[in-house]
Length: 132
Image 1: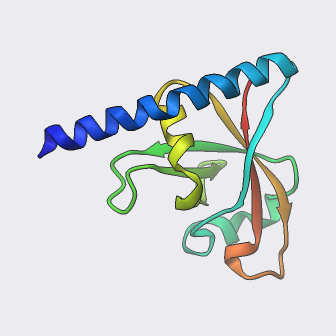
Image 2 (image 1 turned 90 degrees about the vertical axis):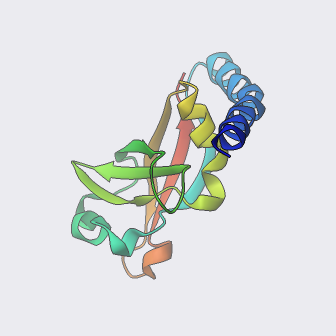
């Protein structure tokens, strides 16, 4: 059974590789970063997001950490600010980025919008960029 899972993971990585290479080429051609996706932070209310909300503003860079051993999602990418986890890249948006990161592609995450009065699941929007 583990052979099948390993094979699937490997095949998934291979499937995502052309997209990663295309994005990397686009970033080089543009001479800058390329916006890949934008999304609201998942799980914001369950982590330290509300605690550091006063530090979140458009342009603030977040650190991303892959969590392949996450028991709920093996493609999990956690988002951090100053050593505190604010939430995750949503599951619907983490399949290709997880493959890209696992393949050595550098992605960057920056806050694009903060709506303090909004519901927690639509409070902080983040842009995902492919670094040049």
